[in-house]
Image (cartoon, rainbow, N blue to C red; front, top):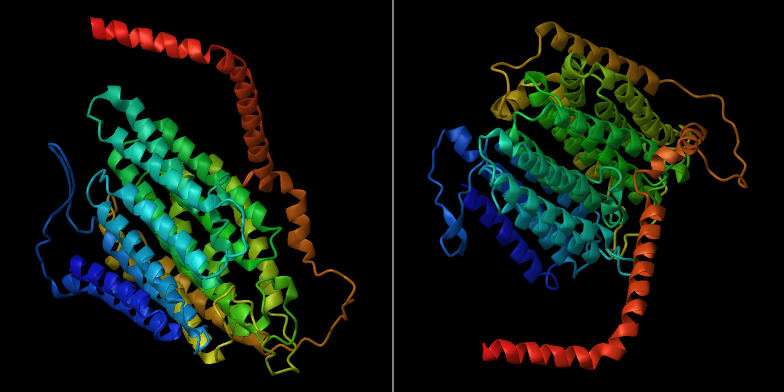
Length: 593
């Protein structure tokens, strides 16, 4: 059925591209979202009907006696990841389509390229099923090119003359992955190949860190964070994490057991990425950039889990990856609602007449799941991670808890603004949003709430019933335990927390704030807590993207290059003819011999 899935995605992309100027882009977007959802459902046909359809092999490249054969099939745990990717992508495309004005045309290519980017990410999941498949670098490069094209098609980069840093780093990541796969293909069972295994894992780790923006490589998100919020969530919340972290998980499974030093390297890399990204996001007022930093932070948490071993750590990494996808999806749709209602993603500009309590509720659930609070899905990933870390790396728990506090402060500032609502004002004031060339408008509130509600339901549902994720995905992960490592007492406690939380939520809803402090119009909007903390730890945040250091390094290389050229020019003009004459003499002597 995978051939059918890819055929649906490619056909939808062709239709969107071909009818771009003939049909309203909104209807093309709705059709693309429906096609992607149909492709996601087609993945479930075989397991639900207990079918075992043959998957014919395709020869991708033939070089002499060497042939690279692609057999489209999911590996262990790949089916759940592919379904989450496509279903989340369908929801994002639907939200973006509903935000378009009915008469807008000419942007069908955007939905076509977004659909193909999802297909490239799904192809990487399929390619991971075959050990060290050399089709992976091709899928990485294709996804990066399509992602840059999607952002360019949206109009977000039309006025930008800066160097496409994300595109360059993404293509560099595919080259490093290719190097890691080529080195890994030379491994044998002898201990002499430990150096080759370390080199292969180092290349793959660098490539994954580049695509997911782990410090100091967060510059890879420079293009995606300026795109509309839904598109940014599609790219750095779904496509890139699935490609990069899915490949890293598979590579570690292939190269295990790892040397002890590599467990320490992965733990430290993940901790630093989590701390630095959380510190950097404290000073952000743009929610799109804030979510970009949080994607890097959660990616670091997945890398931290990969540095641990055992049944808990084995399922913690994919569980945290799924939590990254779900929370980023909910967060970006919340930002999309904020942009439609206020015209900006700057949460300091939210006024008391913008009724965003529903968006605030979704932001609260996404934040709580990112922090690992019950009864949400993120709690289980954090629980399994802490259970494994307490046994193998207890020294890493204090910085992990410190980073969690930073993440809490990051989400607290926007949450306070979302819930800053004057109950005496019921009407919403809709402000035309800057759609970056897309002709975005403010759709009816119910359409936004439906799409956002669909995004946050899995976070709560999987948290209350982790058996759904276990039966659909986690039990097929390589190295997983025979049964779900969740006790009945703990699950009942989580349900109890959910009930208490619901009661407290409705009590807070009925609470009336009587004290109001007038603000001064001459004062700049500022959130004192997060801003002050972010300013105090600015050196740590600087490590996330050390632009000044990189720029000075580049300037130094240019100066060295110019000095070398000036030195060579002295000899170039004087000895040019002598060099040509000597070359001719050498050629004549060789011919005479």
